[in-house]
Length: 237
Ligand SMILES: [Zn+2]
Image 1 (cartoon, rainbow, N blue to C red):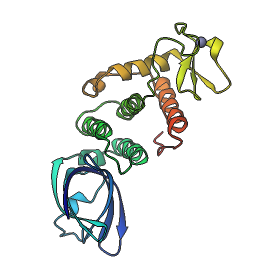
Image 2: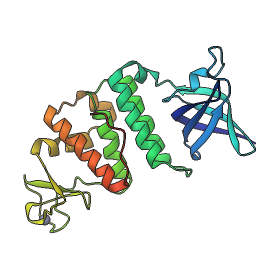
Image 3: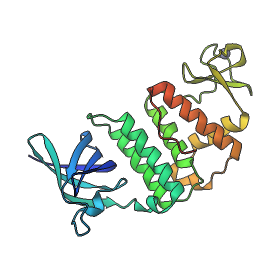
């Protein structure tokens, strides 16, 4: 059986002497594991497609339950990401989040989010971690975990400058409603999150937050991911 899918290579591993096992995140079928034969040889026709970040149209041949990649047509080249060490780590963290959240069920929304993030990381130059932060905020939003509302979700009072992020519920609460599972978030950190949330990928390059807020935001997204999905992504700070 032959299948045609649009996919991004999330992970690769060596297999036998010249083969690769690759994890694809496809638009049509979610995550698919497949093998690429002979691609480690320097003259292999498909060697360009065996690396993470490759975005293309893959033709898969399914024999005896194994998917073998027989053809690849590049849709967009994101290999710029691999030429800059910071972009590379940031991109790897994005692929890691997709790998951890995806299954063999299609998730077009996650697929589109991934492409938007990789495009921005590859072709624009926002400050370090902003693409990852933006991507994570959209992941939470798309999964029903939006947390930047104006009111305390417990008592419904408008939030003032003393904001605590409640890890148990994944939302900001006020001073009166804080518990011992809350972390205090500075004003710079909170407004940084708001800016990131309101700025499209295309305008991220014009955004500049303070250094301390950047670290605070990253740590908050990291903890929230752990609490919401019970997993941790590969660390980049
Ligand atoms: Zn409250």
